[in-house]
Amino acid sequence: MNKTHPVVTAVLYGLLTLGALIALLPFAWVLFGAFKNQAEIMSAPGAWLPQSFGNVANFVTLFAERMFGRYMVNSLIVSSATVLTNVLFATMAGYAIAKLEFPGHKLVFGCVLAAMMVPYIALFVPQFFIIVQMGLVNTLTAIVLPIAVMPIGVFIMRQFADSVPNELLEAARIDGAGEFTIFFRIFIPLVGPAMATVAIITFLNSWNYFLWPLIVAQNQDTYTLPVGLAVASQGAKSTDYGLLLAGAIVVLLPVLILFLFLQKYFVQGIAGTGIK
Image 1 (cartoon, rainbow, N blue to C red):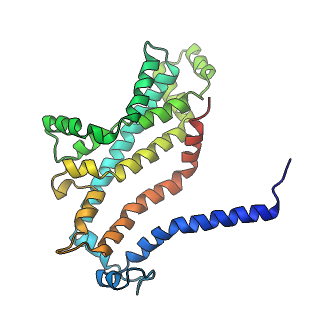
Image 2: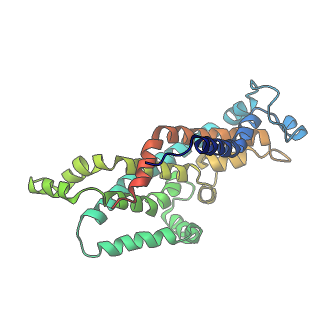
């Protein structure tokens, strides 16, 4: 077995470390800027370190005066609902397409692939018309419905389900197990990494959802965090960049925490979608 020369290995790790540090620089600037007030940011926009890391006035203002707590609750409700519906329905659809023989199952998968290719912006007008006709404008339900099931989730689950041995499922059928028993007690425990991948992707999409909530949420009671951040950071005459940066940190933290806990399953799920 050929071994990489230690010098080459050291250079590669050095370059990777340098690249990671460069990629993290904007995030570091946002973090430091969250502890600055507007005057400090405007007087020295290129400065890195704040005068004091104990200055948490921006965070206090967001939650005490700008309804950020309400926006966070709305985002948690929307994200939790979309994660649950996507994981459940994508897993069921992936199992059906990959493991059940029914007329047109290949056509169904083709429709899923076609749906992934449609630009989301092209669906705004018909979606908004449907939401208006249903009387759901300015509700959290209106935000959730368009992303209750996303094609990318079905695609991931179908690809991962294809790697589950058919012999295992056939053995369960021979023993008298029904499809629901096979699905819940055999199939689901085997596709945990793919379900975690769908959960992460869905959470990221719904947590960062901006344009659609901006359209259908027409008062502050139904704003989610991205929309609320845009509104909360607007001052009387200009944008309050301190509030904007502090809000960006608040929005980022749940995503970062979720990924840190589920990154192993995320990698396994993405890798598993290519297994045949």
